[in-house]
View (cartoon, rainbow, N blue to C red):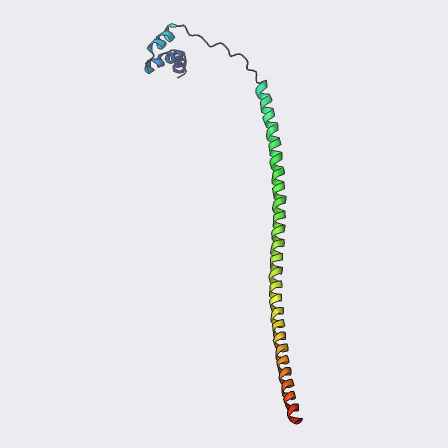
Length: 141
């Protein structure tokens, strides 16, 4: 099993060179087979410092943005609480106005009743005065 795996590893570079034949690139495949197997030169070291600096800057911006969002959230909560207080005050005012309107209707009814009673008494008084005047006119011929 190990011999088969070793043979497969040895044949792998040749298989990589032959596979482009299946795509129709025969010229490339032949040149790959004819050229000696070369290992790729080691990649030059990558300078990650600018990326790390940008990443640190992004983290700082993210922290700043998160703090701003938290501040806005707390400000919105305060506004929501104030709006709730205003709504409750408006509801209380509306209820008080409704009670005042009911009281005014009751007072209006009482005043109308009193005015009708006073008018009735005035009519009775005028009628009694007329009757008395007529009675006195009959007595003094």
